[in-house]
Length: 241
Image 1 (tube, rainbow, N blue to C red):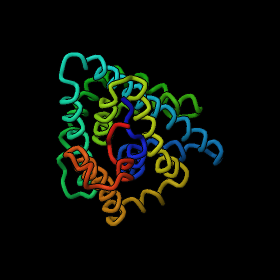
Image 2 (image 1 turned 90 degrees about the vertical axis):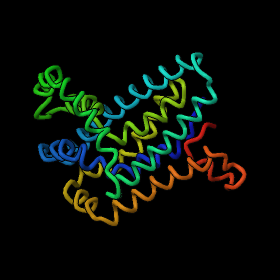
Image 3 (image 1 turned 135 degrees about the vertical axis):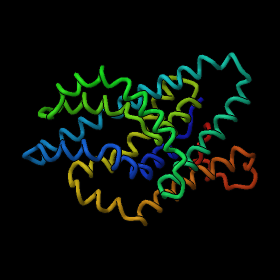
Image 4 (image 1 turned 180 degrees about the horizontal axis):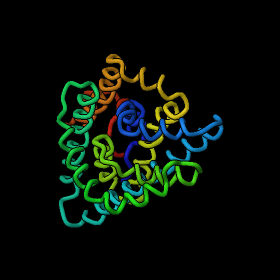
């Protein structure tokens, strides 16, 4: 079952303001250690390629696991429940971006505990990748960083699970990753100016409202609002094709 990818891309685009805090430091280091703009661009693109590849792998795993479990439950009921949950997570993420509610912090905190448990294994790898001198190092660093605990990524992974298929789950996370790409490439190329712009309250509120809107539209559709919403709104909701 394929999922609409446009809203996933737009969630990544609007929600990428969250990436400034999560990935800003490492992306900034890639640019500050390079002497030429072309070198910076290669490193930033390699880093983001690795990061998005990890997202796609996570999406494939989530979609594949959900697909394998479909025969164990009432498929229609399970899917509807996950649609509600996925869109509620978007509502929570929108409020989080607006600094109106910090409820997603507990989710990221739980992920950080797992990340800390993995540190003894990951730390030796990280030492071989820093400081980044080659695109290959940036690629590997991005692949590791893609598993960093992030409430926004977890929210979209629920949508990847809804696809019920490894290939579609990877496609969902690719769409999301491409949505975050402009922000992180810009952050790598012009660094501090992007960070200053993203700290403005109006910018955070606007991005949060956009993500919140996607979630509310999805809840309206999941609640049986097909007959009271224009057909074109479907392309902006987390719904199956």
